[in-house]
Length: 130
View 1 (cartoon, helix red, strand yellow):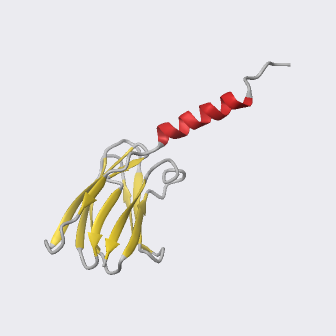
View 2 (tube, rainbow, N blue to C red; view 1 turned 60 degrees about the vertical axis):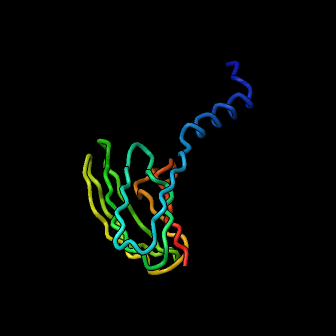
């Protein structure tokens, strides 16, 4: 019979791995009343930056999304009701522009819908205040 490391060692190892996958929060704040706001989003290996966009009800955003890696990704956007309003595929190294009108206050979620990508850190939110 093999002598396995104690369970608490496995738990510590799992914690370290999950901590390494944790994404640093980056915030962009939109200035109200400036017309169409251009926001750059960078998709890389299991991260989206920025992770939080703070905006106002009625703002018009132009999301310039760049996939900076050789793996295909996606950017899916949900309104506060959880309805998908946009979903765009991003090939390796590809860039796209996504116009987005913030027609309601609340939290708009964005993420990569590829299997496990959101869970591993490819997610963010747009916080829309009235």
